[in-house]
Length: 239
Image 1 (cartoon, rainbow, N blue to C red):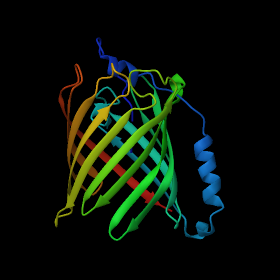
Image 2 (image 1 turned 60 degrees about the horizontal axis):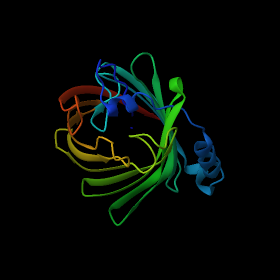
Image 3 (image 1 turned 180 degrees about the vertical axis):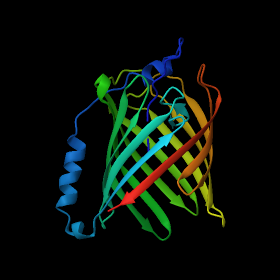
């Protein structure tokens, strides 16, 4: 699902420095949504699942979060029949640190069009840092458009990952007859601060069963304009 960069390069860009310093917030959002879902009349139709995986390089919006090293991850998700959901996801980063994501929202499908909206908090407990986003996506016929807006952070005056930052993307996926799924995503990050390093990225992927091979490339970031090949394995268990 979603992550932030920790980079130990000897001369990190301003973007990379901010990516490595994001930290922990409260769990108010998750607790509120949990209470809402538990009082929903559709609790009997709830589904819970767990996921875990490993990746040769953990990338988020085109940027490595694990300093191009192997990363482990895992999470839990709760969904009820009304469309409301809650989830948590964690991943190792670099230098022994980790990321914890807490999210909740609502998804539905109307006339073959899918809608998803919610709030996610990116937490960095080792550094007591965080930032939060509100997101909305709409999809049809394999295409998905996504918009995310930063609504708060540990430092709302920062160059990156502060209130007002905007990320938008367009993705397409196609499943072939042999069980291989091809995907492509193009995204753009626009930072609210005038000195923010706005950048674009492209992701191309091929998945089969639990494995995904991906190519990521970015443009607009100093010392990060490269192309990265990564391999990931993940498994989801439903209860």
